[in-house]
Image (cartoon, rainbow, N blue to C red; front, side):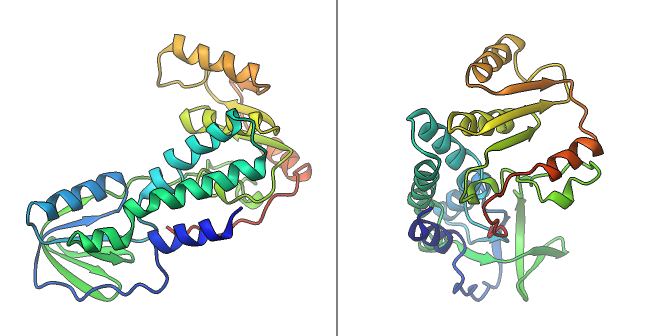
Length: 261
């Protein structure tokens, strides 16, 4: 992993030395959440002359930049190109850092948006508290997105499993990887790691992968995953015993840092 790229990315999306601005007397619009929806809403409104505040508690850019589309597609591309795990992850961090400039605190501040880093909470319908300050706003857009959810399986939380929010912080390649859930994110990560040389099992409770997509398309993806060496386990019911076995046979993993978003 390139520490320089990683440090640059963090500085752009959640600078440690950033100080929130003095709130305006009143905002036309306050946006909570600086992911794709929140960023577009804030910068368009500011461009039309509105006085805009943007609140983000973790990292500018949201899932797409930090733990979703950008890193996952870059990892897939690196795996398809035959890169080693270390080189593929280094490329992930370099691409993410380069794109982060477009979603950065600096860019939005220069665009006339008042950026507030911290947890936002409503005091009333037109008052929002963030980092000790009160924002008075005419309208509010809530664009907080979603977070990774751990299923309530006995023993799962104790093994500190990877999620899409932590997997891109890995510094060492796992020799074996079990992926719970065969939606788009699970399929992407399973394929990327398999192509990088990790032994992958993809477990899905339902009868097929990609249950929200067309069955014929899902079957084509399933066939591709099998060709890449992934073991599909469909109709799989994960239990305490399976989690216990994973814990006892787990391979060493890279240290995980807390999310900075």
